[in-house]
Length: 92
Image (tube, rainbow, N blue to C red; front, side, top):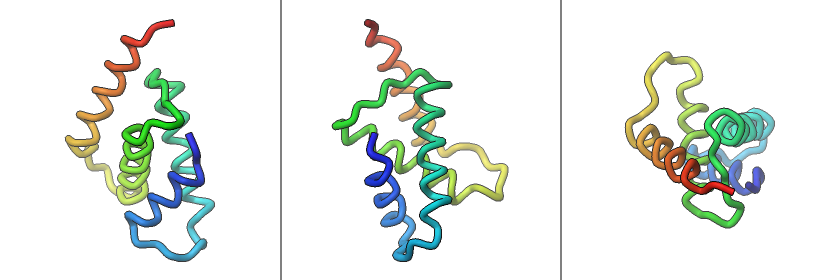
C-alpha cells in the first residue's frame, strides 16, 4: 500500500493544503495499514482502489475523531467487516 498516495488523498478529503500535518497523517495512515494487516488479518492489495479508499476513509475518521470517544461510523464498520470476511476466504 502506497502510504504517500494515501496521505495525499486524506489531505484532499480534509482540505489540508500545507505539509504541516504530514508527519501526523503519515503515522495515522501507517498505523491503520498495520492494524488492518496485523490485527484484523486483511491482505491489502497494492493496486486495489477500494482498499486504498478504505484506508483513506479509516485514517480520515481516525484523524477527525482523535479527541472523541464516539463509535466508528457504520459505513466504515460495514466495509471493515466485509474486508475481514473477504480476506479470511482468500487462503494460501
